[in-house]
Amino acid sequence: MKLSTYEPDALQPGARRLSYGLFCWLNRHTTVLRAIGALLRRWPAIGGRFGLVARASAVKDVLTRTRSFSNTAHAANMVSGDYLIGMDPGPTYTADRELVHARLAALDVPNASDEEAKRRIEILARTGARGFDLIEGYLMWVVFHAMKPLFGSATDAVVAGSADPSAQAAVDEGLQRQYMLEIRYVAGQLLAGSLATLELRRRAETCGDALQARIDRVSGPIGTAWGVKSASEDIERNAVGLAWISHPVTVQSGALAVQELLGRPQVYEQLWSRARSLGDRVWTDAGFRKDVRDHMLELMRFRPIFPLLARDVPRDTELQTGARQNAKCPGGGKVSLLSIAALFDPSVDRDIGRFCPNRDWGSDDPLRYLMFGYGYRQCPARDHAVEILTSAMIGLLTLPRLQLAREGKAITYDGPLMLSMRMRIT
Ligand code: HEM
Picture 1 (cartoon, rainbow, N blue to C red):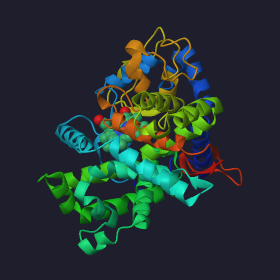
Picture 2: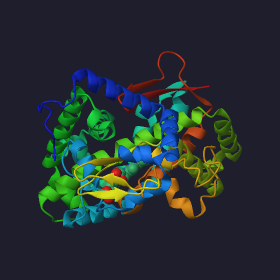
Picture 3: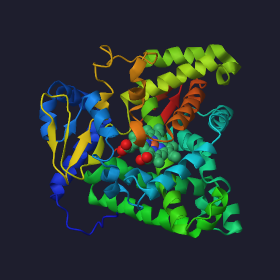
Picture 4: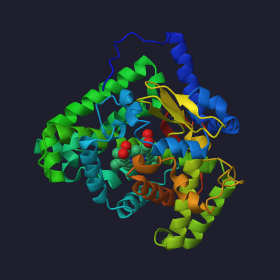
């Protein structure tokens, strides 16, 4: 379902700007969100009255009751049309899910992500750069190259937006960058949600239309690359969805994790020194890789890209918030899940507020991955994304020490998205 920007806005312009500003501010200040989450965990009945869920047990409960709490809550923010993440179970959902699993099986991670991370780091070393943009100069490319098999032989056609071989031959980094910006704003609308200002929504819709048109022109090559003969509308829906859902979220998650790491100088120093002592073995030492992966997960726990998730309530039901009485959820309403509060629920571990990459999560291990959702609707690319970001992090650890750039603003934001993050190599 695609909403038109030209519908009268239910919110006053000032109220929209204010609530959106507050939303973005909270996204950047997750400690405040965590503090609110702690209050709602302590008094779950209060949250329950407003459809807010914070305890780990309650968040898991909602996310596993997929028929009572529906993913269609995402649909209104999917500006380029319907896709798996916003669908209810059914034949289309099942077929699309199979397709995404087949495409993910074609990825060659961590080899491809290691390769691109090494390549980018070598360029920085060769040119003697004293600084670079973490997003535009590094993460974007590591993720792009790792994800190439999603479109396989049709990648250049998708980037060029043309089935014409001469247009595909002209694909260079400039065009690739252009494509990545387009999908970034489409994905951005899913993060910004219904509070986004109308200007932002319009920009996302324009990019969503452009993405649809681009894919429409190359559904033939995509079908060939995927080896499927399904109707072109099925190919288009999946290709459009895969384009925006895969790349931008992974890049943003990587940037958030690096920001969190740099805010923890001792943790960074420890990892960096280990990387240094490993020398050439930094890419092959399995113990180090596992440790960096554990760090990556812990950094993502502190800075999840989706600190909140929403669900539609199709018909009257109740949910167990953890209070003595269940909260009523009237049909037609919504519930909001504070995943970030569940990730820090002390019922899992009394010491859960501490940064501890080696924590033994025991039987709660699946909760550790809550930044990817939970249960059947969890992100199918979870492990691939963690591997790609682990490669990216190992690459960064092989550089001389890193800091955020000092002159001017190091990080530029665009709503809840980070557009650029300028780094200084010291
Ligand atoms: C660090 C990177 C990523 C993060 C943090 C992430 C996060 C998430 C989350 C939280 C959900 C569940 C949303 C919900 O339950 O409402 C989800 C679903 C999904 N993700 Fe990811 N994701 C990432 C990367 C990717 C990539 C690379 C792909 C591409 C292939 C992908 C494809 C999907 C799909 C298709 C779904 C919908 C699954 C369903 O509804 O059954 N994600 N992701």
